[in-house]
Length: 292
Ligand code: HXC
Image 1 (tube, rainbow, N blue to C red):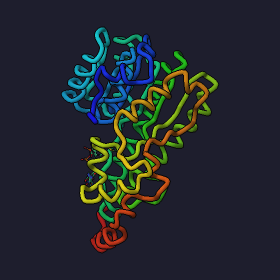
Image 2 (cartoon, rainbow, N blue to C red):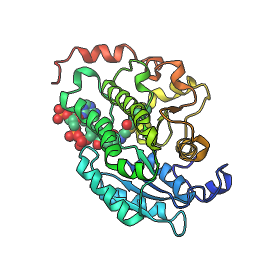
Image 3 (cartoon, rainbow, N blue to C red):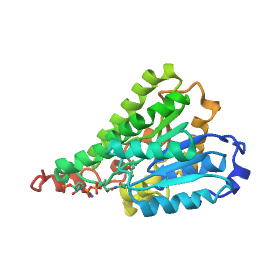
């Protein structure tokens, strides 16, 4: 399965061409492996999109490539945007409104993660992930709220299933994503009366993504896959399809919800624990001098 979508998506998908004609989406982390494909699906189905990211080269290149998917589409690539700084996000929102007219859909997708046991996770490292994932999601909602309110829009937060258990090597990301879930649900309650929906997508093991490569060491993959009820890894298109469903009117009565897209994996327990690494891998780490 390819990483990115092509025009054949329009032929094979159950979604109708032009579904999002006249809509504009704003996507943080939009050049990344998951959010890029969400952007592609929206553009193929008629939307114009702004993708924002830290790296100008990567973001601008991705925007150019996505724009080629549909003639007449407009895709902005806004680099040098760090979601940890609300002013950065605000400026990106202003540019998007200036160039594309408005914002209807928002995806808070920028995230940072790595495997680290608690003993080697410094206070700064913990805060870095909280800042990118949680504060970054808040900043994205904050900076786009005026547009969301004006256009009765919809914000989707990209979360995870890490925090559904106590997962080793992921205390930082688990804490951050638990916060993102809480934020999204509160916003659903507060913003619903203004016509704004707030939902979450929790991807599981999605092949060909940065998260997959960072979090599943190669020697654990085969064993981990056996524990996925649907017996396959997910694809970026699985996430894109869920996104299209959520942004469409087919889900117009859904807010404050998480759609887990993981082949049923979280129901079966922690991938790493079942891969036979626990507890030895952690016990050894706990013996070192703590990194503060
Ligand atoms: C321990 C680490 C570390 C590691 C960084 N740090 N990597 N600690 N193990 N592997 C520590 C550093 O030592 C430093 O602390 C602190 O984190 C900040 O590091 P910087 O490099 O200065 O931060 P920054 O440049 O802002 O980079 C942020 C980052 C980086 C998160 C650390 O990896 C990044 O930019 N990632 C973005 C892309 C990404 O992560 N994509 C994956 C998303 S996947 P000290 O104390 O030493 O100064 C994802 C999926 C989740 O989120 C769910 C999957 C199912």
